[in-house]
Length: 473
Image (tube, rainbow, N blue to C red):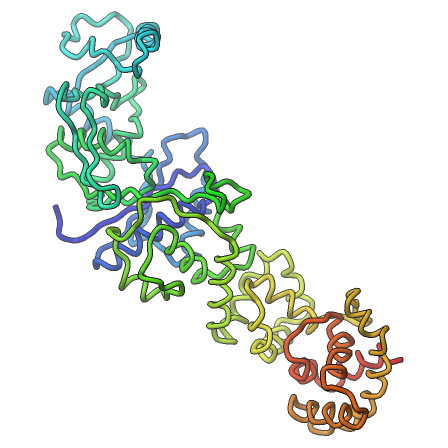
């Protein structure tokens, strides 16, 4: 076996890149990076009825958005069918597999007998040692492996520990169907061997496959890769992850406004930890990640924690970087039209000037876009009910009093308008908040926004005064 670590991510292209698959890809990518190896991508597209090119594109695009690109072009499992047949035939030639001519009726009979005897259905090996010359005419055989009849197959799993499979339970499973197509069990082994995969990191729903796949490796005298079966993700209530919990494609998380760095930070903590660290940078993930530290228990998906982690990364991002991100994903955001209401250079300029205040409260890019809406709102401004209460409860009188004061401000910036408003509030015997809240309501139509003096600064003199005149008593 090569000294260089080679991992692989092997999704079926029957839908988008599921969030559980994204975490599996992340663990494979991180381990390869940590060990100075590489991660490969194999598209397991042998189910021709359910596999689509659109799904292949969505998986590759999802990995790219997350920054988890494979190190080589993707491999199609379907395109390797001839190689899978070649290996199955080689096992027959070596006496380690055989042609089975059992009819569907015979297999049904075996199943019924096992059911009656209250034991798991197993193929009874009736063609294991028979000569193919006895084969019934016109029947296309399957190829079955000759599994050991006694003893155990032991898998040393880096997450699950030592797992023992009684060989009598593995039975002579099928490698090649009667139409010449490989079974999943067989194709995976041949592909992983040929691709030089040294470490198989995948969901623990595949753990029962590891015993059978080990038999194929040994029958071919191939090195058995290191297995690491990671726990599945459950919902916050402990139930299997479903759409109501967050079992969505990664493109849905992009549309919900999560950053790739935030989503990766959250996913890496689902089943793996580094002390009590909650916030982990991509560089730290690579430096710290080890499959030996993955927990055996199922991880629980929690949107509140994801929001908190993502909010951290929004605040930690540079202002210009966030503007670029918003502009690049606005087509995918449900409220992205907010960022298309003005020419791009105007949108960029206003966002950049407002970003220090905007990003402090936002947990997602959707929230960030929503909180920027006041920058691009057309007059007359839509006023939310709570903001209208402030204006109707004496706020419009305050706005009327402030208008002439602000009209006199010559050098318009956050500091100068703040000084003017403070002077006015002091002269009127008002607390600063009693002057600032009506200003915020009149300028943004909302009761929450970045600092109100930053709002005046970003909107500029003309737009600020125009909006205040609309709301003055």
